[in-house]
Length: 108
Image (cartoon, rainbow, N blue to C red):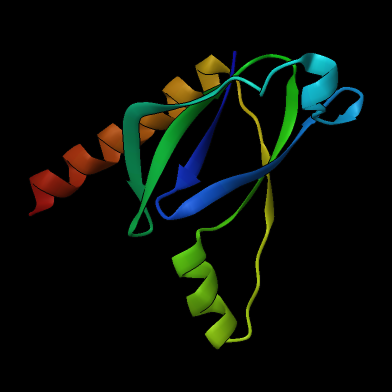
């Protein structure tokens, strides 16, 4: 499995696999993508952890409809290709966020 973090309010767009864009007709199914019950806070943004199957190489993410409407009002459009990470990298990032939260609690 592979993983990525996605900001609250962003949605998954297109999915890439080794042969290019994910083709549901060829695969006979949608890609396996699951939002986990784990999140971290980074730069005042809530980032949710997602798990994807190994066949997925890259994920396009974009603002949800509400965020997209707000961005259009500001003439800013945004689509991001998310780099997938390993389980070890996801655990490291979760642990780093936990340690940072503990340090902030000690100062507060």
